[in-house]
Length: 421
Image (tube, rainbow, N blue to C red; front, side, top):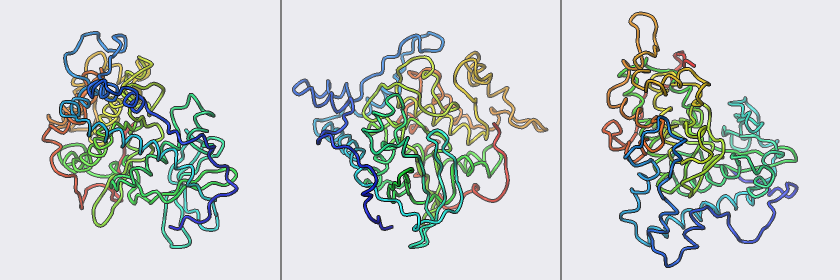
C-alpha cells in the first residue's frame, strides 16, 4: 500500500541529537570495556535476585530462575562476537523505535472506508477497526488512538507519561524491527498516519481474529482439544523464545494479543501489542499485563523479572485454551478465590476440585489435561518466579514436538461454544 504524502501538518518528533535510547544492557556493555565478557553478560542476562518477601511460602529453592535459565542458555558458550551481535540487535531495535516517528504520514480519510470495530482499546482510549483501502480493495486493521495519548514520538510520550508502562511508539518500533527480520508471527505494518486528533496504525488483517475467540469454537476439553491446540502452542512459544533469545520480553501476553491468520493454506499465529515490552533488562518495574495473566510477584515486589512474567502469562494461555476456562481472574491475593485456593493448596488439588462440566459425566480440570501438559502448566504457573519453567526448559518436553505447521484445524468454524469466565 502506497504510503502517500508525508504528514507536514502533523507535529514531528523533536530532534535530540543522534543518541539512541539506551537499555540497561547496552549501557552496561558499553561502559565496561576490558572487564571481561562474563561481566558484560552479567548485566545483560544476570540472575534476578528475588526479595524473600516476594516469595510465596518462604522456602528457598535450589532451582534456577527463569531469568538465570535464559542466561545460562547463552552464557556458557558466549564469545565476544556473540555478545557484540546481541548488542547490535538491541541497538538496531532501539534505533527502530526512535526512527518510526519519522515515518508518519498524513491521514487521508478518502483512502479508507470504515467497515466495523473489531475491538475496543479502553486502556489507550482507542479502538481497532476493520477498514477497506479504496485504492486496492484490501481489508486492513487500523488501530486508532488519540494524539493526546500517543503524542508525536517515543521521547515525547515518555516525557508526557513518565509513569506509564505502555508506549505505542515502542509497539510501532518493535513491529517495524520484526517485519525487517521477516518473522512470520507479526502482522505486516502498512504505515503510521496522523491527523490533528488521531494516530492511525495500519497493518495487515489477521483473517481468523484473536486467539480467545478462535479457540472458543472447537472440541470440548480433553485429548482431541489438546491435540488440536498443540501446533498453535508450538508457534506461540517459538515466537516468544525468539524474542527472549534477543532479550526482548513482551510483558502483555494474552489470548487477546495473539491473533490467527490463514496464509497460503496454513494457519499462522501473530503476536501483537508490544507497547509494554522490555528490552535488554532482566529486572523491571511498573504495572504490566492483564489481571488474569499477571505473575503474582508483580503484586508483591516493586521489581520483577520480565521474562518470568512472559512465562507465567504463557502458562495462563495454554491452560485457558486447553481447559476453556481461566485459572483465576486475578493473581492478587484476596481478589480471587480460585487464586487464593491455589496459593493455599497448590495447583493439583485445585485442578481436582475445579469443575468445568457440572452435568454427568462431571469433568474437572484434572481429568481433561494429559499428565505431561499438567507438568508443563504447573511449571509455568509456579507462584515463585525462581521455580518457574523458562521457555528453553519448556521445549525439553516432548509435548512441544514438531514445527507447528497446521493446514487443517478443528477451531475457527461457525460452531458456537462458550468460554467460561
